[in-house]
Image (cartoon, rainbow over all chains, first blue to last red; front, top):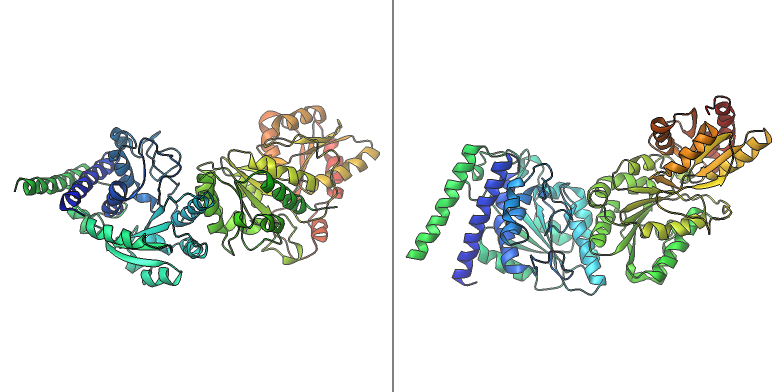
Length: 283
Length: 312
């Protein structure tokens, strides 16, 4: 990846983070930490990886993205809006009555949302079904599924993980956002999920580690994951609330919305991150 | 004599011949759910998910999202309970076209006992917005409902039993649609609404009632949701009383559906012939239906009682 491309992606990620913070701030409701941890992964996918056409969101041979950790939909909505799937003004209606942007993903209500979600542990099974249909039709589109780490506590994930390999659905790539948190606190303190790598590998998957906030490392991981025909999982190490210090330090509970003061604080921090980019360019 | 399962298996094979987009998923129940003929003819479109109902339903939803017409089949007892969240989240909320096939419903699992019998499935499926519920009374109906359900834009729960039953006359020509019902016998003394295997008991009861001078009207409510409301209300206006018979718990099934309709439009005296909020046990299906009071005898008794209270 060229440095200019990397910088452009990073800059886009900051803009997306600002929108996530604004959405959740305006709605006074939504999951900040889990949304911010997934932003870089989604930005990389939507600007560098996926075969999609925002003006034709239901194009049959598009790549699919199933957001299994549905509570992180602010990140996906902000990505879709900034990528041109719908008007960015829609973001300010997030979670409001009648809004196109529901509290958890809904299809076909929202352009660019490929699968329903909200109840955890369902994305991988849905992805398998999509991949199976594409294979039956001889279409080579890929299916990506973004899961949370706490979500791996759901038994249904493992029914589906077993079946992805059993059906040889190499078109399925899972990404686990290892941000280490769930509703009530740290995943490790509630119900341990490790060793995740060994779990997936024993289910017939290839696993690849990645820094979920480093665009170059994500590019490397995706290229490894997509390099052969067995299903792959990218284990992306992330920081909950990435980009907003209070959330990174765990001072905002995973489900606690932002009040006005916190929102302004977050936007100031993200603004200064943008400025540091500008400064770099001047140099 | 054939079971609704037999009719379903034949219908599925024929549908597979006509439509290349039909994909059949089952949870280790290829033989018991009569999927084998389809699987033998179309192995590339038939998948045994093993003992994983949740995964099967999620995959069915993914197939439907991508333009396929999935049938997801398993024991009613496991499909509608174990995978309820998946049915709600992945199929019913987004209103995806798919057919959920619950086999061995009611007491049909017989000797396997209470864990395998299922008398709460109509209640569960009926409670979901966007979900339709269809229950064939005979093999011919089951054959045709495979086609009807596959053409419906939203999810359909198809409830099948295992008992051998005679084919009802005229089923091949009858109009079978989601939201429909069939007037099988006309009468003006009492309305009998029934579904599934209880349709046969209702017809037998009507025969006996006619000898006692009570003219019973029998409606096959094969679409429990949406109900054939106009057909039922027209009958209630003629008869002024109603017996409802189903092989299901008395809570949440056809009984309460018809009672709810009548309560709002034309409250008439009613009696239920259903399982009285109890669980089953091991036994032959026929024995169990007698033990739990699901035969023509209970329908005759209920009709005679209610007839004297009819309101016209």
